[in-house]
Image (cartoon, rainbow, N blue to C red; front, side, top):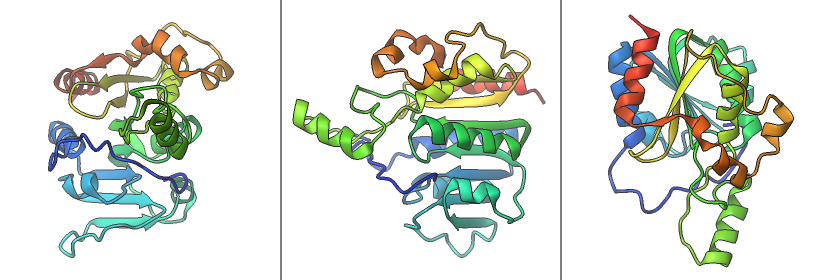
Length: 243
């Protein structure tokens, strides 16, 4: 995780359903994945539910224990920035799940670092890429909850920050990457993979413009997210990656 922060969970989430782990396991089977990195693990619900042999978790706070039988699982208690510059021998990961600090800068940096430790058939999953309201898009989680409660009386605890800007940046500046954003399952997540089909006409053509986007700008340009169902997004991803 890039920095210590509150990561609220939407309390409307159905109990005992681990959507992220289920999706990652589906993807892992299709890709025959054997190594996994998760950035921002909170209490370990997704990490412990992922069925991949070699798993690494990164977070500034350790809130769960890895079972003794999971000999190939390791927890690194540090920020994601510290992890990527550490001297520890890191594998080349098949799947990376980025769910750290929900800001544009940190999510983009986590993506950039993850690209160094992945290969041509790897998939990077970026969590929280569609804010569900203007409060959810605020860069500070405590402000998001405070203003939502004060202005609307809402008790929704969701917070996505401005991670969506990283997808906008991929659209305009990363022609070697392709992506699909999964909607309709639970929390919006964007699958990212290396592809020869990632050529797109830039929409903003400016890093500064992307950084300055507001939630309402996001609404005007949310087609950039290329939303799809989980099944279809995985199919497109696997088809383009190839055998």
